[in-house]
Picture (tube, rainbow, N blue to C red):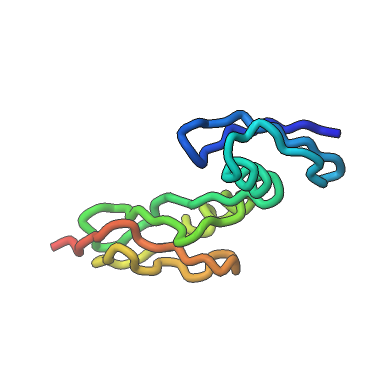
Length: 122
């Protein structure tokens, strides 16, 4: 049996939640004040995901880089590969916040979108 400790981020209480597992099977979750905590820890243990925020290169823009983010959370284990993939992406200005700059990154079904407007350099 292994015990993992998580700090819950679902509400301001920041409960310290313990998850007990054996062979990747959850046996017990304890220390949560609300049901959100139990759900958070279960998901974090079985399939951790994160929203990716980074920058990509932009050509002819008033700035050299464009801030972008994933439209939906991505599997945590793919974050580094996603950033590597995005390091090869270049877009041309102008860009509007919400424009898709990389569709279906790494075949995850998640699009990467611009997170600000960026006008063309004059």
